[in-house]
Image (tube, rainbow, N blue to C red; front, side):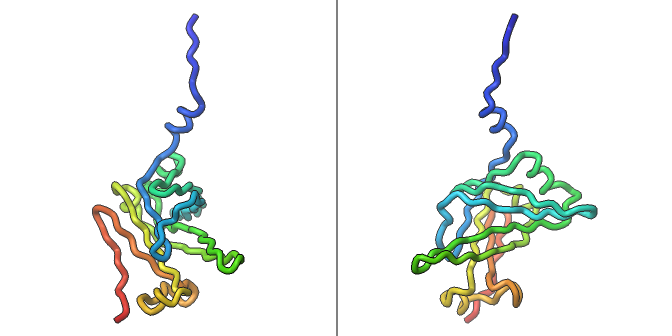
Length: 151
């Protein structure tokens, strides 16, 4: 009789997709573990997909990654909540960035978010919209998306 022992750790590792990903907010690399959410819309549904961010890595369930890059996916938004501590108080800033499938299939991504509540960036950039007082830039090996800067 032969028994096969499987480690749950190995099974879990096989079920995830790790992407090389660096998240930068206001010129600071996010150096803490964070939860991100992808809002994925197809012709028939909208789904929220959770992801874990560690500095340099974005971890998704493999099935979730496949949903995101599916040909049926029409739009992808990446949501991130940034917490800033000022004078012992927590300030929360929610960012929602439109993302492209091709970027997530690239070798790496560097997402830079600029909070325009900060004077330094308010002088350099225009907000995404009147309700979104931030902007972003994305760099990957096959594409770069930079914002026009104010003079």
